[in-house]
Length: 118
Length: 114
Image: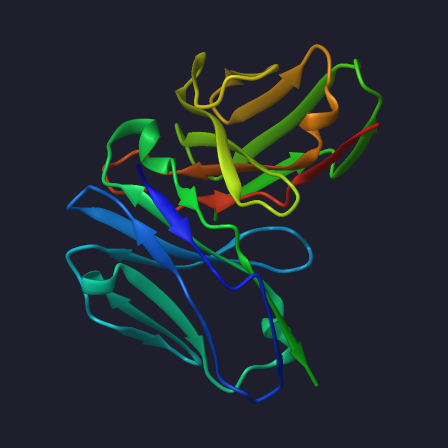
C-alpha cells in the first residue's frame, strides 16, 4: 500500500530562519510521482513541485529547494530565509504513474503547519 | 487561462439534510475532475473522479455521490448528511494526457454538519 508520512505536525520559526519539512513515503511501485502543495489560510491548495521517480536531481526554485532520495524514500522541502508569507500547511503527496482519471489519485500526507513569526 | 470555481464557500447543515456542492472549470475542455475531502487533522482523501460526462468513479464508499452533467461541471451530493460528513471539500481538475496529473484545486467548500 502507498503511504506518505509527514512526522512534523507543526513547526514554528522566526523570520529569516531556514526550515526543512520532512516527507517519507512508502510504495511498492518502481515508478511514481511525488508532489508538494501549499495550503495558505485561505484554504486553496497551491501546487509547488512534482518529481518523477526517475529523476533524483535536487531542485531549487528561489528560496525553495527539494531533496529527493530514493534510498531513504524521502522527499524533503527546505525554505531558506523564511518569510511570514510562507506560513501555511504544506502537504507532500505520492501517486502511481497511471493513465486516465486515476492518475489524479494522490496519496497525501497529513500536512505540516508552518508558522513564521516576524 | 484555466480557472476553477466552487460554491458555496461555507455551509452549515443539520444532520439528515441534503447537500449539493458545485464545481465548474473554465478555460479547458474535457478535463479530469476530482472531489477531495480534508477532514480536521487529516490529509486529503480522494472521494470521486470523472473522466467525462456521466462517468463517475468512487474511491471511498459513503453516503455521498457525484455527478457530471456537463463537461466542465462536477457536483457533489448527499441525500442525508451525517455528522462525519463535516469537512473541507476541494474540487480539482487535471489534464487527460498520460502524466498530466498535476491537480489544480478550487478554493474549497467548508461544510459543518450539526
